[in-house]
Image (tube, rainbow over all chains, first blue to last red; front, side, top):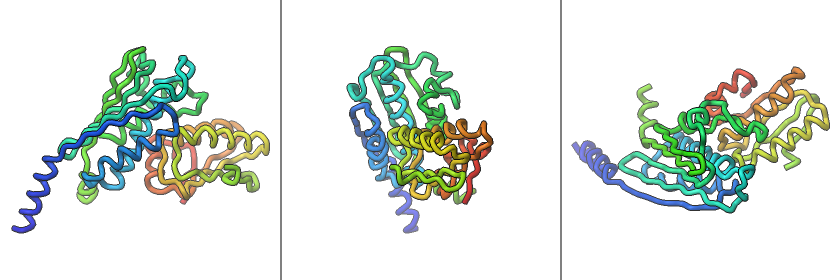
Length: 169
Length: 102
């Protein structure tokens, strides 16, 4: 009975959990590490597994890298570090909602951009796996973009589940 | 940086940093290419012993070097990769073109 009570309370406290944060930083590659670590630190109250933390860090790293090298593409006339990348995180219950936003050149063909191995920068050794990784490591991915209007990447991930999924398997 | 690159026989050993991302990938690719061209080394070994994080930029480094040496019969190896790094490599099917060794 005692265990059931504790369990119910945990469930309730998890359900009431709501937390929000915004980040704004210069679009330079030095900040990629900062961004992923900041988001990882933000979700720690949800008791994520190491695996989940790692998934989130990878997805954030991909989205921020995209904003810096594609959104604010120096070949399209953007000056390095002049513009900002914005991250908006919202934790609702046990789900992390994260938006990575740039005000850069936008994407002409989103469907093509999301294809695995498609890249516009093969000369930079880009693998074309950015969106594929975001899709693989998060539960939900949505990309909103228009040429010249910037890009917003929306991702969702439910936390604290992989531990018992692994047990069941 | 230079001490992370070593040529042993016909193998270029590349010690990967703790975090492999876009910020670090450019200089790793460039330095590796410099060694491949200057020494004519045939194979490349990426050592992930110290690596705790890698995103698709790491895939780009490996694939880029693979393209440079594979046409001359060279091979690419990944060693000491932990389960996370292995998973990242497998997701894009890299284990089909490179050898992942324990």
